[in-house]
Length: 251
Image (cartoon, rainbow, N blue to C red):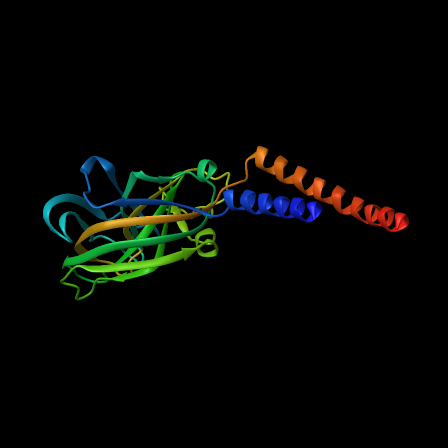
């Protein structure tokens, strides 16, 4: 009986130890959009000049309250898929080396189109070490959108790791690193290589949020404790048969 109680205690300890290193979540959100928290970026690709991008914090008219208005204009491109342009936020930065590898991202944002010409696809961005990665999840097409609309979606680890991106000089970037040794990643929103040579879009952004699913690495002390527990369990399991034989012999 004592052996079984001890074994149950060991299994409970293993369960609690595993739970302490299970997937965690870190959430970022912005619904006020202070100008100082956001920086614009614009990158010309395929030999084209970069688009012109501007952002304007607006005190009212959002969903609800304040929001950020963004304008992106491309007039001088000679080929389609000509620019990456948008904004990223330093306060919305996740550090995998501190908080663990990324298993998924849950993205949500409210958008409203004001003045749209040409393609009006808005995209979620991740920025790492000077490289910009755009995603079509959630799919955010603003054509005909005159009211605030909420877009949300989940980006899994495979999609993140295989994302295409560009460096600030417009050349192809290495893949996005989401491992536990990766550099910090900033989050933002914008447009990425719109399929038109000219476009001019103005839209509103509100209630932008990113929930990062992560897998924290188990601390060294936890691993040692778990290893010791497994070793002790093995010793007890090996000793029990001899205990039974001894009792049987006495009987």
